[in-house]
Amino acid sequence: MSTLYIHIGTPKTGTTSIQHFMSINADALKMQGAIYPDLGKKEYLVSAQRNGHWLCNVHTDPLMLTEQLSYINELSYDYDKIILSDEGIWNYSARRPAFWKNVIRAIEQYNYDLKVIVYLRRQDEYAYSHYVQQVQTRRDYNYTLSEYLSSCLKGKKNFTDYDAYLTRLSSVIGKDHVIVRPYERSEFKNGSIISDFLEVLGLTLTDDFAKARLKNNPSIVDVLVEAKRCLNSVPLYQNKGRGISKWLYDVQSELKDEGLLHNRTGFTKSNRASFLAHYTQGNQHVAREYLGREDGRLFLHEEISDDDEPAQFDPKELERIYDALYVYNANRKKPLIPPDTWRQILDAAMQTHLDEQQNKFVKFFRENVKRMKRHLGHTS
Image 1 (cartoon, rainbow, N blue to C red):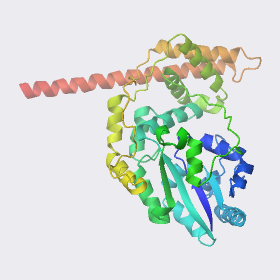
Image 2 (image 1 turned 135 degrees about the vertical axis):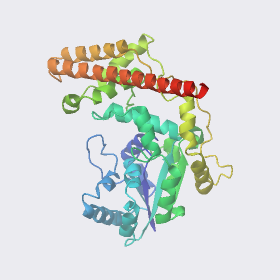
Image 3 (image 1 turned 30 degrees about the horizontal axis):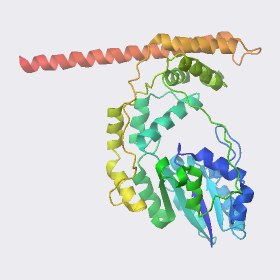
Image 4 (image 1 turned 90 degrees about the horizontal axis):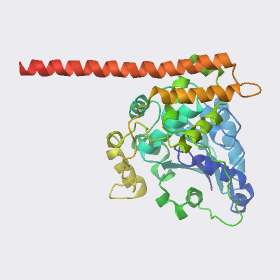
């Protein structure tokens, strides 16, 4: 019986590297009786190498599930292992309780087995990395970090309750059909996510496999995250803004060269510890149930670094970034955005930051007044 492997992420666990490697090694995979079928297509923020992304669209096209699984069934006559991968399935299916039931119902008519592979990253690292990615790649994502983390705890913006998800998944497809791997380099086979993924599939990394030369997509850090988040708050930017990623990287390089970048994430050690505490019991259950670790340690690297500073930015820091972004656009032979419009957008982003800082100060002042009144009332 052939096996259909569906790799569902989670996001920010080396999925792009895995998908690229699998895509460029079709011949080497076939030599070992495996196939990474070409079922993907290029979409906004979605690479064609994510060949399982169509599963996130079956709600709009129910026939797609039947058609694609029928094709996979044809492949099962020639290949022992069929592999699909898309990190979007994790959050998509978490919000749709019937998702896996529908998949199983469609698969049952075919003669192949199902295995679901998921890599889990420590929740604080996963959440912050995913948050920055959303701010960086989208033009409408303007949530603050605290708002994002709160939504994670509620299971709204991002699903970080691994135990709840895996329990639900196992109740549908069976625990024996779920493969869980911690996303920790020290735990990867040969220290490589690729070697680890192939081992999960029961494949061997031979000289027939080409090495992936994947272009690294840098992440913005520190004050650049705040600058981009405020830009995302401007409706005019949401409609007009595009193609400024390289400009952000250029500004970031300049600030780094001048020693002006820090690690002000706002996700400090105490905040991380508090966030992780919500998942302690669930993580222990996952470690015991899916990894056979009786000590309940899902992540062996548990130490929380103390290098994240409070996110406090001088307005002049953002002004410098916005001025540089204005110049980059103006210096083009054909500006991406009309200069007057771009100046309007940048000024609005700056005002967003100032307004939010003012609101924080007012809130802090009011809370302290209330605290003083309670104290005076208690002592009188």
